[in-house]
Length: 327
Image (cartoon, rainbow, N blue to C red; front, side, top):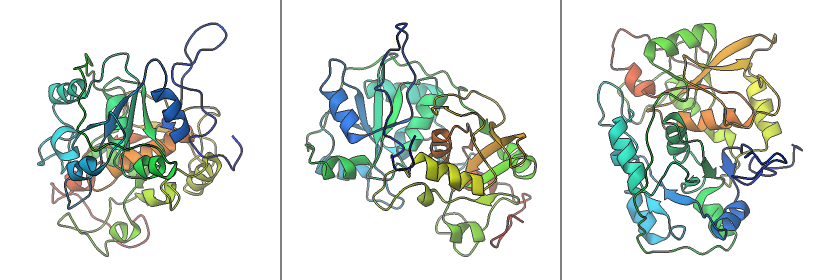
């Protein structure tokens, strides 16, 4: 892909077929133009609005002020996470609860799903990852979110939408995850990326969790650097260069971000060409999914530490590093 193209450009439409009639895989992003065309087609995708802000106001208020026509709203705290506790602030919900939420949003086994947030995909990446983790591959993130949709002059609606219940079946374990022990090991033997803002990584500030700092050995890789000021993902060439600077490069050329399976970690390639395990964490496993998405765009399947920093701190015996270095 030429360097000037966005990460969502030049991707085949979901469900497109190659010459032998089999469907071809697509990348995890969809542009406004692609989505508009898909919505006008014979099988429009299921739209899910997941806008959410740390500290509020509730995302449903933003949804009711204007959303993509036909989009159903899902709440991060209530439907895309379990109750806060030993697993962190946003642990995975019970499998049956997630299945019910997706069915209520109209997701079926054959549904093409598009999720979006306000702009930068830091929230939308979470349901993208969750649907993939629970076995639904036909899910994409609207690059640039609602802001890009409105900037293109597209229509918005203020009416609550509902869909006929779907038949989605959740089958967990389709993408790699790590727990606290796995994250600690990755930080020493592979690459563990900290997706939070640099000041939180350094331990200079911590607006949510009781202790500031980072997992020893983790590298600072704030998700804000994955996107432009307008919220669009940076071109793939720029993302590839970014991760190469962190010692990671794509394990294979041409990967589209739809590969990956269960295991202890995702695989990339190190500076010396050897295969390495890659993982990501953040405060509570939300923005780290954005890191996993960005890595998928450059062909690196990465494991998600779902509990992240909020889970790490539940054991006071776990070490904490501060400062600009991994520690």
